[in-house]
Length: 313
Image (cartoon, rainbow, N blue to C red; front, side):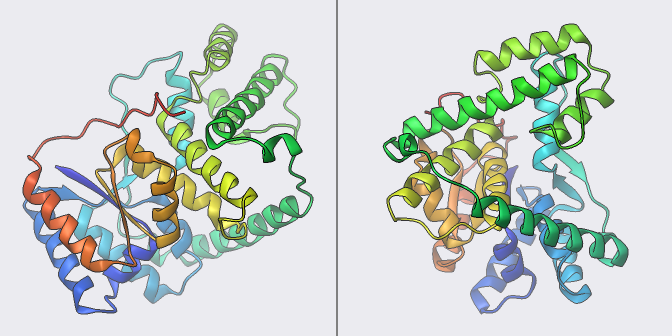
């Protein structure tokens, strides 16, 4: 069974087709899902982004994904990251990136208001953070590959700092780089010995090689490189959400249908060197239709193994 990841743009076109071709694509996906040839799991980011919309829109997105997955969904980026981080020292043989969302989330008005409010405040924090951002001259001279390794090292260092704080019980509010990860480790009753073992793995690049981390860093490094050299759009708070969704798709999907700029960024980042995921742009629905038909006709009905990004960079 092939796995298709649809971003919010693709889901919107399929939920309420603006052109006959999108209705045709929707019918093909639905037919193949019912024949157990493919599935379009619901990305958590679609719930997150739909929460800011009106009830009618939320219900249309909910109905679409129920039709194409019957509740199967991708776990949230932070959930996958937390679980795979712990798995570096506490293996989980039966782990998967899937969860279940019942078709009731669209009608939860209170939750939608909370998510919308959280998104607004989070967006404001991101904007303020970027206002004070000053890029190092060293970064401006780096290649994409060098940026990838620099960001991977930086983020690994942030995690090591958090793990030291956890070991020393110095977890003050606002002091952590990855509060959601540390909270997860605490909830899982991670031992001091496991923390020390995890630190060693992080120091040897094991954490940065987790597929969703590697792909998120790779796409982000290319965006940063283009930004330095005048080849990318101005930073927007939603960019981070988009890159995390792309990282999940590149790790666990056979096909990723997304907005044009992100599809182009994935292409320029050379993601096809590290995974077999086909990335398609909603700007070219004819190509989406043609590629989907070609893929589902050519591929055998088999379970896809998660893509490995261990060779990124």
